[in-house]
Length: 334
Image (cartoon, rainbow, N blue to C red):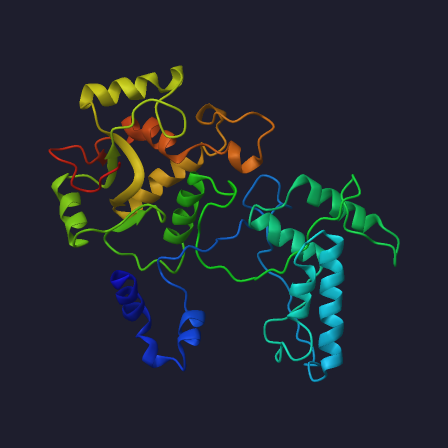
């Protein structure tokens, strides 16, 4: 708890800079609390899947001055949730009635197309949702229902349309997308062209020492790109597997066994890093690196980044190395 409070104070300046604790918590989420990075249209092979890269937004007049308006909204929400079989329908609807709500800054209306794109972006759009969507679009004016092919209403829930961090959500993320985003940044005008660049996994990497140590370890290896290591050797999703990986596995064991490339932490020179990332992404859809069946979602058919890097490692050695000297100094992978 102390650690969490100190992180909050360091990143936000403390509660004294806000009018109340509620405002303090609302205006800036904890840096250790995950959010979402939306899957966008164009990220997958099917360009129509995902959230919009750009969209139009409009403002409506603030008509929330009469309790009658609030009551109508609350009753509408209750009726909708009752159709969807929500046992809390009336309680939720009552929260929006007159006397319960007094401002409209969190209220908005989106099209059904926007809602679909948003749920796809979060990885929460299911087959039944698509059926309901198509049935709604095909319905006659005044007779449109959001029901699947079995006649069941699909839940349409309130959404919050701003997310600024990345976590895995229902599989709508493949590790090699990380390298894609890193390359995009390195090739953009936003990259300050530093001597070194480092990136790491967001969800399971914790700094336990001075970051300078990572730079010092890098220079000990006399290379242009240094990856962390793991004892994980053989298996799907990140390991050596199948005949086409035998040469790379044999090469690594002859060079030095027991520690193998881990894609979770890497540091190196930007120009060479871009060269390696481009080579990786040429294999993004190479089916040798995936073990998913043909009927799997498109994003699940992408190659695993760690497998690709292990495959390419002999080609880029000795400019690309792994931290396998003495004890593991760059990172620990448990």
